[in-house]
Length: 257
Image (cartoon, rainbow, N blue to C red; front, side, top):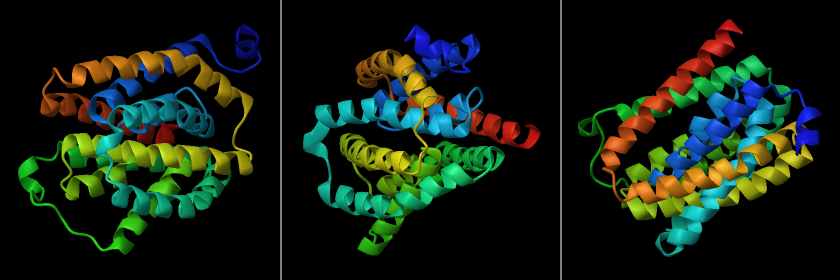
């Protein structure tokens, strides 16, 4: 590991950020069922190239998603999972092409805007949202999955459209967490294949993933243990604030360079 680390361009500051983000993002994922990529990619992009951050998050996000699915698999809504996953898989190649062809500043700007939009939606008072479950045509579900697939392989942030859709569907928390985690798991497996095919997977991303793997495991365990003890609402307030800060930082880095 030391030899691999030396062979990369990672500074010790970058290593410290990678370890801290691995723990913090997995903590959020373990506690509320989503948020790993939304937290990790903007913050990692401050010290890594966006493409490196995206690939590393694919590996690390799979840890939290798989653990959540294993723990709550009996609560997965399979019809939603199947439609969202099919849409995502079909659209992933387009996201992979965007990842390897778009300028870094454009990726950071899009990432920041997406993250800020998601954070502002979560922060908005519950009174402004529809409280009754919304019915969607199957085509709409496939399209939501498609948007998540493009975001997945281009920015590793497929959460926002999935979160908005599943919240609108009115799923109870445990079904929400298990269903979105199953979609994340499928998307990570297929998405990694797409990234390999377009040549986006490289040694530095693998080193970053290896450095953050143990902190990610510890973070998920801590978040999962805490989820039953803290108010879901109050913890979401903390996560939403962090998402908004991360999104603003990403936009600023894209604009200021």
